[in-house]
Amino acid sequence: MLPEADSYEGLRDRFVWSVPERYNIGVDVCDTWAERDPDRTALIHKRRDGAVETFSFADIRRLSNRLANALAAHGVARGDRVGILLPQAPETAVSHVAVYKMGGVAVPLFSLFGVEALEYRLGNCGARAVVTDAVGAAKIAQIRDRLPELKLVLRIDEAGEGELDWHALVDAASEDFTPVDTAADDPAVIIYTSGTTGQPKGALHAHRVLLGHLPGVEISHDLFPQPGDRIWTPADWAWIGGLLDVLMPAWHHGVTVVSHRFEKFDAEEAFRLIADFQVRNAFLPPTALKMMRAVKDPQTRWNYRMRSVASGGETLGTELLDWGRQTFGLTINEFYGQTECNMIVSSCATVMPPKPGVMGRPAPGHDVAVIDGQGNRLPPGEIGLIAVHRPDPVMFLQYWNNPEATAAKFVGDWLVTGDQGELDADGYIRFVGRDDDVITSAGYRIGPGEIEDCLIGHPAVRMAAVVGVPDPLRTEIVKAFIVLQDGVRPSDELAAEIQAHVKTRLAAHEYPRAVEFVDSLPMTTTGKIIRRELRTRG
Ligand code: ATP
Ligand code: MG
Image 1 (tube, rainbow, N blue to C red):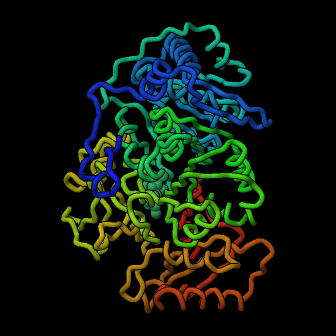
Image 2: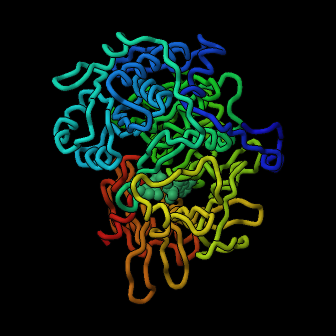
Image 3: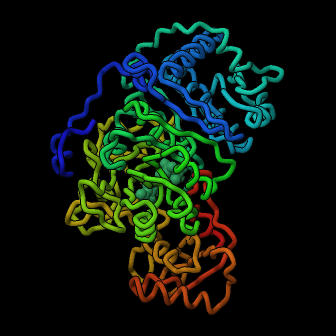
């Protein structure tokens, strides 16, 4: 969607949104390519047993048409919510495409959710059907009688009693299907937020959300797509980062996606997959990068050649940037967004000089600013609220069934992200912290990210999280929770050494006055540190 230009300013100034009035994600990512280049590879899936399956765009159209017919025959209608409770798999992608083409609303659900998480989300959105596997079905069985609106459970493996067999349905259905003619503004998908700050909220998005992602995707992958591109992410497609930052935008561009389901993220396996499948582009969240960083000498062990790596969801930091240069020979592009309004800020090493420690600049097409509580733009150098001006094609329609929360998200025409940041003189945006995570100490506002980045620069530190704990003198003091590298023993001497490490590198008021060694950090299923939990531990 980006115009031809070789500078950020050129891309930004010449950019025009092209969002047709009638638009359907499923048609865009599948049928269009199935017409234009039917044999082109859409998906390369590495199964758990190591076998590899390949699907062309024509295959995806055939399968999604059949599934759409089968769902319609079982009463699923336009506007109905369909839960997709599956890990990365061909059936997951096909189910999404089918639901979009039927005019339904897909509700991606993370396969490792427990029964409570599922009951909350399926109940909240009133799902009529859910597509799942044995693991998911066992959980659904425990809550099905409390979900009166849930009429159909489809299984991609063997169906049990009261369930339908996805493959049998698909095999029996016709492959002729006329997609529902949707408006770009019609609902397409409900994605629940990570729940880092409280109960997750269902962000309802329109079909246009995919087009809204394109500028951010394209710049965060150094002008995606380029010849030979092939993309992969370990992020589950149940999250916006997997679904709308990788799978769907890649297919919009006709780029092959590599998929695999990790039981648990495995850094060595990630390098192997990148090498074996000649992955050229990846979205790797900071937590994944930190785990990959613990692998010794990947360059000599695997033969890979990446073209672009994008990272977002949490602060990237200079340590990981440096490591990325050594490991991939490229600059990792940080991007920023949230489930409600995503990929709105990004770096792009090819057109803007990278600035360690800042997220990047507004992606072309998005008006992102730092504002005060009344909606006034703040000048560079002042910390305020990161906000996005509406209308914007990537912006959500509303929180599902929650008008109060939707209204509270806006100040005038600004969507307020709930994050604090600061603009610099060159128009880059520095992330300070989530509203709740910003530490106030001796009159300073301190973001945890910079300190955590400095901490992981110490050779003994594997992961770190920083929070403010109440202090009578300074309001709050900085406390660090630290996970050590394998084989390193905690001690008071080591704590003092780590404190000194920060003191000599950052401002004196930023060093952690308290240090606690822990075995692991509380994380959301998306791999984000839940600092709120650490704060209550004190
Ligand atoms: P909830 O809204 O339920 O508390 P959540 O905000 O973690 O959960 P997401 O929408 O998955 O749910 O995450 C978006 C948030 O992640 C952003 O608002 C921001 O706080 C954080 N984030 C995203 N990108 C970055 C980045 N590049 N640097 C720092 N933080 C980031
Ligand atoms: Mg949020």
